[in-house]
Image (cartoon, rainbow, N blue to C red; front, top):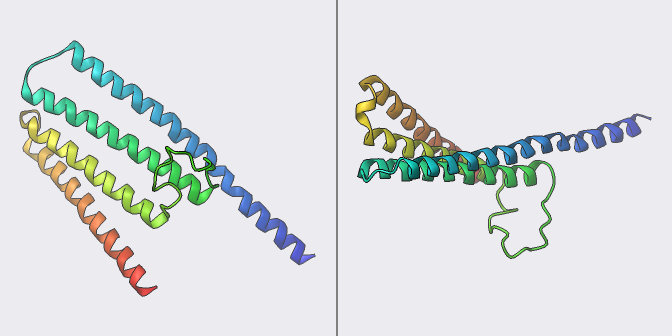
Length: 167
């Protein structure tokens, strides 16, 4: 009797992974909204076109920032779903990304942190192109936040290296 209850409980635990599926669907929806913002940025720039070099660079950095966020979402959606819910069966489709199915939780964490550092760096670069819009305190805060992301990433990578060496 106890063994059958244990098996029942284990089946429920294993099936509970499907509770995460709506989270990944929500991330897919957010990817669509990110696309809407991306297109909006392009229309805004085209309608307010200026030959100002700084504005062009800020526009390009904004598009890069948004595309990094989209890439990050795809990595989290694919890797998270495959690591925690179920394998994605695309029958070796020719467009299947090489990393798909190979990014474990450790790799996902490192990709996530490195993407956050890249996005933060782009944002900081945008701030430096528009320094007159910010106070000295705000600029220091942006630098401190970026520095915190960088240090966190380095510490996380170092800890993962230590764990790998101990195994």
